[in-house]
Image (cartoon, rainbow, N blue to C red; front, side, top):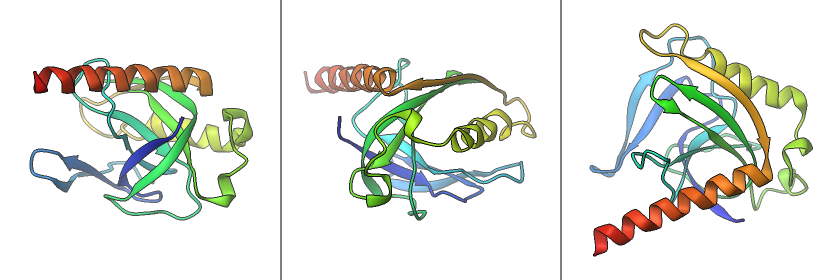
Length: 167
């Protein structure tokens, strides 16, 4: 399953950038309240929608070097990090770049180190702790099959909504 991730936040950043789709610009949403940095590039999978239909499916991309907001990376999913926040389900699909030899042999979640998965889980468990009225609840990791099923469902929702707009 080949996908395209739109990067909003580069690995190592404390700034939370978001794409403002109506204006076609990337804007600064906030600076993280905690002294933590994003453990991977972070953004969303193009042509997907979450269950609520309000936003794209979030994605984490394991990169050898941080990219930049607005960069598009061709990726493949290897797993999914399942969590909730104050708005509800907030899962993140873990991906690797298709054209980076560093990640060429990584096909399954288990091909990554447990330490890396723990670092990602720790980041999302605590990155909102100092922010008023924001919470996270970690549910854990699931493998590539679960990630691909969620991506397929998110793509179907996107196509359905696009079809309704075109009708």
